[in-house]
Image (tube, rainbow, N blue to C red; front, top):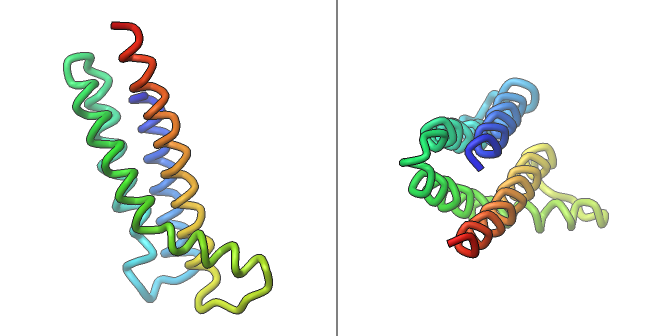
Length: 121
C-alpha cells in the first residue's frame, strides 16, 4: 500500500500541475489535486516503515475519502457533460472527475488491503 500511495500521489500532483499550468492558471483551485497528492506521497514514504504502516495508510485513506467527497460533484457533472449538457469550465469538471475516480480506486484497494490484513491475524 505505501508504494501505491506514492504512485497515486505522483499522479495527483501531475494532474494538479497539468490543471494549473496546462488548463487554467487563473485559479489556485486547479492545484487541489497536487495539494492532496503531496501528503499522500509523504505518508506513503513514511508507511514504508513497518511500524508506521498502519497509521499512515489509515490517514491516507481518510485523505482520499475527503478527496472523493470533495470531487464527487464534478464526477456527476462530467457524466452530464458526456450526455451533452453544457457545463461551466468543462476542463475543471474533467480534472475533478479524474481526481474522484482516482480517489475511489485507491479507497477500493485500501479497503481490500485492510480486509486482507485483518484476515491474516
